[in-house]
Image: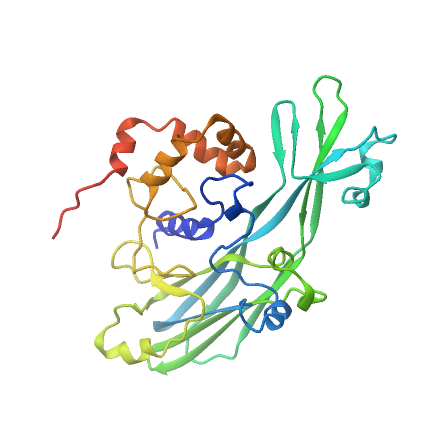
Length: 355
């Protein structure tokens, strides 16, 4: 397996749709998450009669030998709510004594605001994200097995960052980041189809509790969801079978694999069969990042030139908001502004040799 190549493809899947052009929090399409591969809590999915998914299932084929080992890694984003609160009058106590409960609507000292300008920078409310990885212990692929469940959880957390006026050192606001506790499980089952052929089933389950799920908003559920969920499977002493182009003798077995909300493809160097990426985005075997692409844009996999040119046309005020919305948006803007002309020309088109 070529680790670097696989990670680049997986990262592109992880952040696809994270923030959309024009890369500003005030843009309507950035005010509601729509990422691929979102798994909400089970109770919310049931309350929505299945219109929102709480599970993802990958099935693929392994041609195994004696001692074939399977490793599975599940990756997703967890959303973190970033709120900005403004001091509505001088707080008579230290910031630490204000208490988290006082920061929010109806607070005696702070009020939530969409944005707050401090020292020439605009601090904005937004949903950030943290990367989550769940690694399942290696499993011996020797035929049929009972479901092996690996539970996981990530604790709730909250942090408060004071926003100080540089001129007098006074607290003029705070930035609060809040993440909810999420829990889930990965279940792996193997079924022997022939002497050297095994079907692997991987299920990802969002088991996060959600009180009053039927009355909860989608935004509430998303803060307890797995976003951009995908799975990386590796085998040693064995080979995966392409589900898109299986050998003639394995077409029936490949057609019998049932994938729900995800599409497994071979990844790595052309011809390698030791790694599969099961992605909520439809890909072909051995996907690659275009060498002409200067970096991630999060809003499309094949429109780098269009997005780059549109970013260049933003006004100074729009660029300012983009810069202050999110760290990744800031990186896009800085990279675009420093983009050499020859790099832009490369995005305009490339001649590929045809064998």
